[in-house]
Image: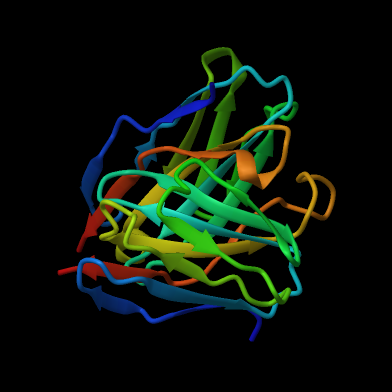
Length: 115
Length: 118
C-alpha cells in the first residue's frame, strides 16, 4: 500500500534561514503523482506543486524548490530565505494512478518561522 | 470569486446528536470530497462524489453520511454512530480525471469546519 512519511513533525527556524522539509513515500504504482500542499492557520489547504513519476526534473518557483529523487523515493521541499508568512503546516501527498480518491497524505510538518 | 465555502466554521454538538456540515462550490467541478483531519495527522478520506446522485465511501466512512443532489453541494452528516466525531473537517473539489496536461489534479479546499462534541 502507498505510504507517505514526513519524519519532521515540527520545524522552527529564524526568518531568512533556508529550511528543507523531507518527504519519503512508498508505492507500488508505476505511474503516480506527488504533491505538496500548504495549510496556513486559516485552515484551507493550498496547492503548491505536482510532480508525476516520470519527471524527475527539479523545480524552482521563487523561494520554493523541490527535489524529486525516484531512486530514494523522496520528494523534498526547500524554502530559501524563509519568511514569517511561510509559517504553516505542509503536507506531502501521493496520488496513485486512479484519481484523487487515492490520495495518501503524510502526517504534515508544522513549520514556524520566527522573526 | 470562485471557491469552496464550508459552514459553519465552528460547531458544538452534544453526544447523540446528528449534525450536518455544509459544503458549496462554484468552481463547476464534478468531483467533491470530505476529509477528516485530527491533530498531528494527515487527512483521511470520508466520502467522495464524482457525479450528482452518486458517491463512494472513503477510508473512514463509518458514522458519516452524505448526499449529492446538486453539483454545487455536498453536505456531510456526522451521525451519533460516529464514535469520535471531534475533529476538523475539510471539503474539497477537483476536476475529474487524472492529472495531466492542463489538469494539475489539484484539490481545492474550503477553510474547514471544526466540530467539537461536548
